[in-house]
Image (cartoon, rainbow, N blue to C red; front, side):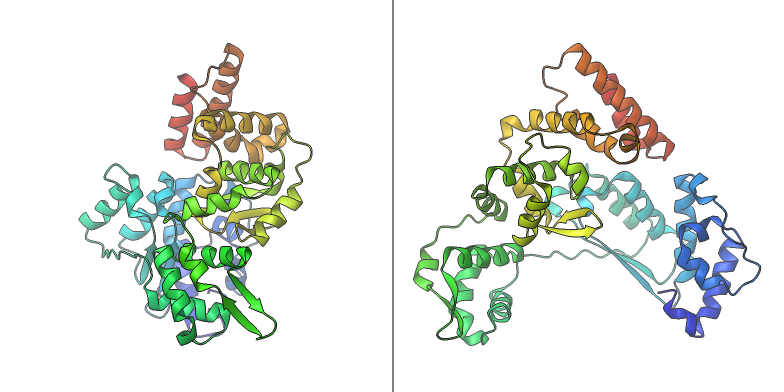
Length: 386
């Protein structure tokens, strides 16, 4: 956005606002190289010095608020979209609050999504929303439910490249079976194709379906249960891969995933290809992957029998600990290790295992303190003490 403004008259006023906000401080320019490129025509800005890394997170948050305030204007309003806020940590919610309640930030808004059935009055997000309301910041809530039959018909029509009128009988059944849940609609169509109820006919050169067979198909109304049943038909090692990836979170690294599985026959590359081909996961960066939907992650997690989840988490963390170097522990793996092993804290651990876990929580707590993640630090340290 800043780069696009560089050739317009808007860039002049934006440069002035940025200089007024930051002067010639170089820390932010090092953290955001494009900002330096935008301002490099100003000869009084020196080469960036390595100061940003030494700044504490609360200082960085303050500078980010100043940056947003300097960028936004009536000519350049900014909207930020944030999904799955029910899972946001306290540091993220604190930053959202700072941005929304800062009177110097104008022409700015946040569009956030969350599951209201997972946010009660005890949830930190609920407290944030109440604080925003009490401080008079504009706040609107929109409840988004399942899509209507007409929308399902449009999806089916676009997917099968057929006229909407021709797809209406099929989409009516699909809507009734799925309840209009968009993720369920897409996965249900894939299931019908896989089972042979929805196929492409080479003779007529169009998609055809067995409507009576689809009508008689028994389907769970819960997309998680439906997806879990699909995953149950996959090879056992692939299921183990899904279970381990689900324990690592909404995003996971391929290298870390490979270190969590003991079976030597497990091939990370093959697993990732199967996951991508099935629409379960997608590549989000070099070596990084994410679930295509949080409900799919939940379905993968549900592959783990409830009675075995504590031991599965603990063993996963232990395996990752054993296969990680000290450098990797400090850089990538420590929090994955501790978070998973902590979920097995109620298992019958011997004295050495308890001492080991307490030490790991101490390491995680100290790192969290050094980055001003005080809520997380308190949880790690309290777990270590207990």
